[in-house]
Image (tube, rainbow, N blue to C red; front, side, top):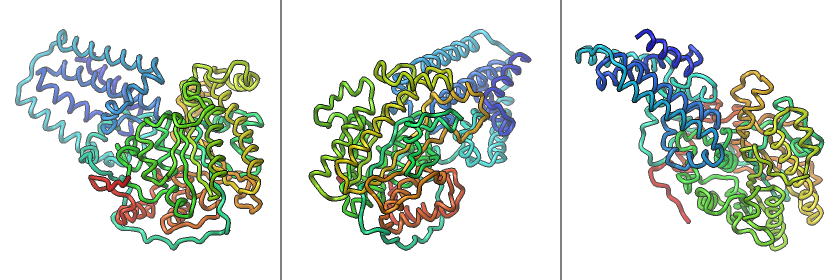
Length: 555
């Protein structure tokens, strides 16, 4: 019994690494022991089995945290049946193999416990009494911890793995019906919408938004960059700054959702991962719809095939008229050749070609949204062509002796060089068309965990959700944007900021969202702003966000 108690204490400390919510973790372990006691009838086996279960929860949560920056919750369990495991197996086979091996070891330990561990049986009366006291203790500990809110706010902290999972199980929202959508940060009273803001300029520029897969600014880790990369991340004649996103390691569509709708994917809880499927037809205010109402031609160019997730249907539903995927591009683009490396030199060239062809066919202002995939992990294989950017790879290795970071940096350089070339070509071909360009990183790659370890950086839960944004103009002499470092932004505000700098009119919804910048600062979901919560209530009450069980989707 002494050894079993010691094992339980070790598991608890590994899973919590903090005394902040240790009471809830202990109460959960006690309740689990009480439940198992009905099955095995002795305390020794019940305690050991509950410790094994807690170790399994901690292990799964740690794997998720290492690859997403967020701990495991009860609402994550359906993701195992939504393509997450096959995706992880394809992208991170060693990590997932280790996770499977750990799971197998825990199962063997559980079987051995049932077969070979024995203790004196306890009476049914004791079992019932223990269960009742443990249940009361768990509910009291959950209430004393503050309910679900502290755990939601601490989802990115590297501690409290077991208590966070237990809190999510006890959260009533985790058990609500699957149909419809629900926002976690919404008030009871609506916020009156502000008056629309008129256009600041008579001309409407073309707008190009590029989402750069897994690109972050190495300087946030104190690592140097060369001039070509610096100009890409911080254009001399543009505005640039830090961008806060909701995801880490993957789930790029959640950043896409936030930019285009002006909302945080995290606000939708367990549905955040599924918004492209369950959200089609539910969001009636978006950046593409607003631009289309102003006469823009809207186009998506994606580095994925048309069959990926629910992209085609979702993007159609939020107002993008033309949607080009890698299996849609005209020759000489070769989709099979592209998919060997996902090179930005190939994809961005094809995307900008399609954009420029559209300009030649139609003089209307155009909106292009381009989604790259070049710098996605893993970074343990060289995707940059041999004998290309070797000096830049050596520069990165001298800054941080790590082959994964050197590969990341070499891909970043190829992207920067490609973008510089395409930007010059676009400017030269259409010298009389002003263009506003916004590009940003959707999330950090898992590889940045290695950077933190090698540099022995202090823990910063928000750093892993920080990328970059840059805004610049071509062929424009109207001084639409200031130059230099801009304010820290949340990705939910980036579309609104783009409209402001383009000088375009803002309708009542975008005008109200722009006013939230001062209340939320560089955060959106993480902000406790009551105005934001009331704004969400207004959007739901107006039907701008459709939360009904069945979406009113129109083809």
